[in-house]
Amino acid sequence: MTHLPRTLSRRNFVLSTAATGAVLATARPAAAALANDEINIGMIGCGGRAGEHMGVFGKMPGVKIVGLCDPDEKRTADAKKRFPDATTYTDLRALLDNKSINAVVIATCNHWHCLAAIWAMQAGKDVYVEKPLSHSQWEGQQTIAAARKYKRVCQVGTQQRSDPMQAEIKKFLHEDQALGKLLTARVNRYGVRAPIGKLDKPLEIDSRVAYDLWLGPAQKRPIYREKLQYDWHWDWNTGSGEMGNWGVHVLDDLRNNVFLDKVTLPQRIFGGGGRVAWNDAGETPNVHFVYFDTGSIPVVIGLSNLPAAPKANNSPAHPGPGSGYVVYCEGGRFEGQRGRGVAFDAAGKEIRKFSGNSGGRLHQENFIACVREGNPAKLNTDVEVGHHSTGWCNLANIAYQTGSAYSVEAASQVKDEIWHSLLTEMQQHLKAYGVELASSQIKLSPMLSIDVKQEKFVGPHAEAANQLLKREYRAPYVVPETV
Image 1: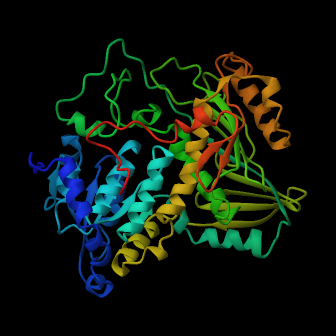
Image 2: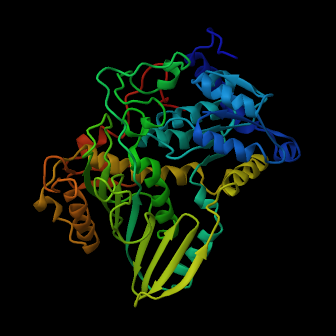
Image 3: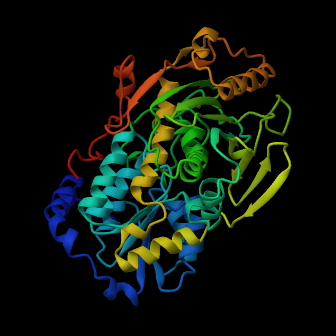
């Protein structure tokens, strides 16, 4: 196994790559040089999602997976069985020092996404980074800055952007105006999950995991859940909850198809939720509901990881798809989700179906094509697009984190019917667990206003919310102030 030499500290790595930044920005391989050459890929993260990427990139003509990196040695050993000629690494900085690697695929915990992407671009690599792009809003801005400075291709893994169906939907809704004016939108993520357990003493980390590297930018705190891997999603230190896990996909669909990406971030945000019923070690909400004031079409999102009732297997009742969105229009409604969509007229009659392929494989092919051309402009989810879609999730999580006990009076300040319909559903859903919406178990944020251009909160309650736009990094794994 290859390890980073002790003499190559993270500080030296950044200084050396920054020093060559101007050269990298202008001296990337010409498109003609890469057009027929094999593109060497390094995998940063070798878990479940990375395995899916390996299955795609590993079968792609003209692409070779030559590097496998994960602080969990069991994962790299398993990946090595699939790619025996690849070099394995524990530390991503050693992989990035390999000049034969042209591009990296980052499928790590959320808290590593931006720092890994920035270091990779500073090292002259193109980047495919999984969603959500960022763990906090500021580091997403820094990742955009790095992509622009070093002129790198940086694709974010909201793969449905590469589904040809999306262009058909946009034409139907906007160019043809087949359903008339778009009035309101509802986004859903209803998916049943299980509690993650709660230990009496901190989790013992497997000796095969280089834990300091696994933590990276995150703070070193005791873990009381039963598993290290995957369930990091539900810990604010390393994850972004269901909002950042699946919410980013459905909100990205909304931004793409409903707003044509013209709304980067909402102007105001208001929401709440709670982690109820489970009594586990998780921190992120398992029930989450948010109102987004976009300045045009009002949007709400409802998320729940709980079954409809304690012993049920199904999610609670809700309009539209379980993971998707509904656009209510003057002449009917459109329901969209991964790989398909359906339009209804005002009487509720189905008038058209849309069928897609979810964008899988095409998204990776789009990335490789852009790497060959050295042309980020042709990316289907350029880093800036991914940053804005992730931003809706980051802001929604901040709203939850700044909340206090739910109040009926406070919730009533939003007058849109779509918001009150969502609250009614949530109230019925929670009652099945003996929880009242208006209780100390459920948080509700203040109404938070956002300066969309500055990507900062303004007005009342802005100070507390702005503190959550940037995390505290653990040295030496620090996202640089200047990339």
